[in-house]
Amino acid sequence: MSGEVSVRAAEVPFPPEVEDFYPPSLIDGAGPWLTKITLLVGLSIVLIVFFFLFAYRKPKLVPGRMQWLAEAIYEFVRNRIAGDIIGPGGVRFAPYLATLFCFVLLNNLFGIIPGIQFSPMAHLAFPAALAVVSWVMFIYVGARKFGLAGYLKKSLVLPAPLFIQPLLIPIEFISTFLVRPFTLSVRLFANMFAGHMVLLVCALGGFVLLNAELVFLRPTSLVSWAVGIALTGLELLVAVLQAYIFTLLTASYVQGALAEGH
Image (cartoon, rainbow, N blue to C red; front, side, top):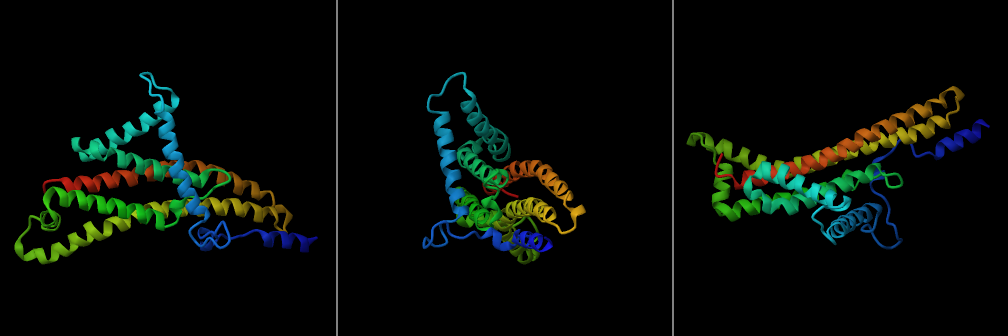
């Protein structure tokens, strides 16, 4: 009997490994591009597009529930992020920021949806790609307003004595053009990666305890699962908060690029 229990426990993939974040191809011979992660990213794009199209297919003066939800999301991003951070000119960035917020939020929520339970944002490549898009955008809007040379001068040359500029300029260059996309992507990735690992440990740990050879340890599997359920609620808050922070920081970088000076 103990041998059978040992075999069952050995079949449980515990502890989780980094390889769990690199799922195999869904179709043999399709290469590394068609995986669960890329499928979820594509699904999120389709869902967002169809949600807004469906919500505004027959707009009404008194909105229904879906139209109200779509308008609430867009107005929140337009007024509370684009308007408050960038200023009156931020309205023209609201479509991108609203799309960015919805995309990050939905992909974050995939991590707590039963049957999916994995967020593409827990894979560094996707937050990094979004951070690069935001990085290119704030450089572009700054160069378009001030000219490339003028934007670089505004961003790198601080109102300080000339003798200290050789020290300040490299620091400003690193912090503005190198550190920003790195921290923007790593912040989102680290939070979603850590949250997924914690939930995975609670779920798989419960199965390991349930199959433990020591009988008195088996009831503690319920504790592991209860903690996982409680942390799922926390992960929901983190998913929303990280989508908001990513969008807010993008707007902040755009505002800095458009500002007249330090």
